[in-house]
Image 1 (spheres, rainbow, N blue to C red):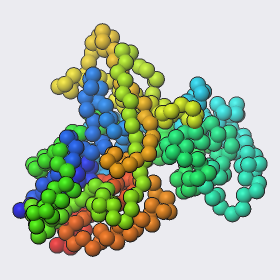
Image 2: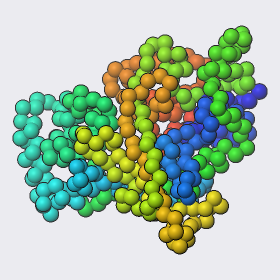
Image 3: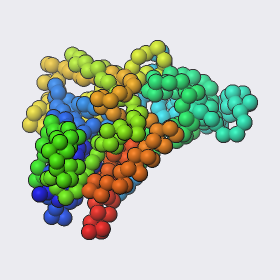
Image 4: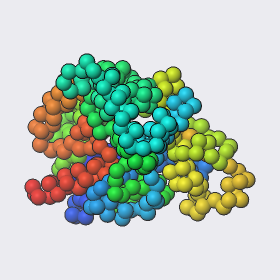
Length: 396
């Protein structure tokens, strides 16, 4: 009998297991996929650490979280500075003086502010009250030129619906800076673990039993069929930590929560440098993908041997390689891998109903991005997992 049955070997589950092990508790982790680390899983391909479920860049202002995560890997000084490609025109992100200078041929913050205010006034003259949708919100922040070229097409591809149909809150925290600074995240600590993320989760789960390719919900169905007294624990543990989709746990009995999912088209190219940057967003509506990720740039174009040593310049020159992912944002359906919760009013209201059901589950803790139906950055996942452990320990 384990103390905790943890469903999901992603970051939340791994942090919970690690901390409980330190408290002398026993944990069993069940993972539906054939690998640990969830969506932060990285794998070595052609000497490159590939982010198999899309780019993950660690950033935080929380010293406690930074101190925690850096126990398990050395982080490089990678700074997220994506660029936007609009029909061959290249712009810096986030929106800053480099962007404004390229867009309008201006050079001072005063000129940039004046241009944005002029466009806002003209476009939103008939607007009454607060912005009612994403389009109005974006224009109120950045004006029409940047909205039309760098936001509209990209956002509609990302969410699969017109900007006028999307809630304004999605873009309320849009970074707009009147300085020449291409650092996307306003975070004190930022970087990529040298050697990828999988090693971190391996260390977090060291000494904990993990069973891969095991579908917890299917196991629960079997336990119910066999008359198990507490099928949610599978008769294996005192408590369950569930990090899967909350609506799936309740067999979608109240309806299905909406997600967006991402599909990746991988290409291995015989060149040392394809696009000159780790992240390039394609912001026009006609390009079917949202962005291209070139993974080697997350580690400054380094390639590695299987033992972790770097390829020499001569080895790289003799056999140049890079790996790119084209990302496509598509509608999610049951059976697909969910990525981003669609936190509009209707989905949040439905989640609240599922949360009420979850609160009645005495033996189950719901956590993580899917279990709580929230888009969590990695640092917040760690923070809430650590807090949950302390809460559980304090409650006895």
